[in-house]
Image 1 (cartoon, rainbow, N blue to C red):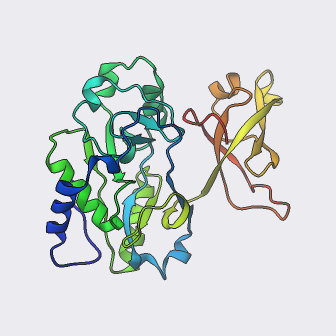
Image 2: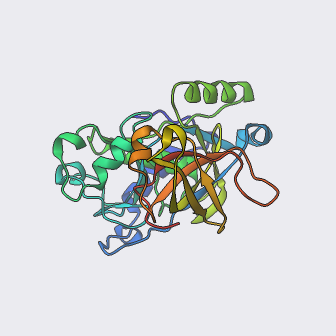
Image 3: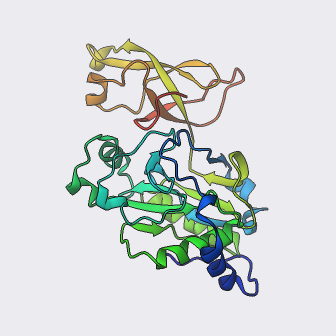
Amino acid sequence: MARIIILLKKPFRHLLISLCLVILPLSTYSQSSSLKSPKLMLSKTITLADLQNIYQNYLVSEKLDGVRGYWNGTQLLSKTGNVIHAPSWFTQDFPNVVLEGELWIARAKFDLVSGIVRKKTPVDDEWQSVKFMLFDAPQSKLIFSERMDYIETLLAQHDIPWLTLIEHKYFTQFSQLNAYYENVVNNSGEGLMLNKADAYYQTGRTDSIIKLKPYLDAEAMVIKHLSGKGKYKNMMGSLLVRNKQGKEFKIGTGFSDKQRQQPPKIGSIITYRYTGATKTGLPRFPVFIRIRTDMEEL
């Protein structure tokens, strides 16, 4: 069970959480299998420098490189509302409350876990390596630090090894946070997520949850394949893409030879990283990262 370091120490905290588990009516949670397009809390991006003055208000966890999952009490959904076809044994003992987390295997294994969870006919052996790493209870009326206590108490009532809570840390010194961040990034981790300890769950993009990564990233739609030259002759040289802001630009780096021979399909969504924006709003030095198999539109 993940160890949670709580920012605020309040009397009777655990009594309150236990009471919530007992008296919170199941009607508080959506049980409808028709739930599509879950309303989620979305993060903003922050730089290490901007974090120095506010970090003590946040609980910190590693940003896992997996597929976001939404358990609506009866079904496991993607963030776009599509049903994730997990084996029945994987979800049959899940609590009948709304939970949110990351379907995850290990660092730098996004493509592997994405391929597993996209299959309409699940393969049991593949799902044996998948964990549902929880990071929130969207319909709880508690603040974030208390929601973590709530989930921990809830999981104590269910012995499910692949259903666990992401560990959150609280740092009293910025140097400690910086050391943790560098350790994660230097060992193939994506970065950090920071949740404001006293914030309630709210849908949409909010300062209550922020992400810290060594680079900026975003999504774009592939609109054309551009032919390569030289060693990339008869292969894809670059992609012409359009981002959410309607800006069109080329991405010519970050691809393996196999990806140049079989490039992302026209209309598919890709993730790219970049180092900032030009005066015209175009991403500076865009580099291809991956195909977003969990997204169908921007």
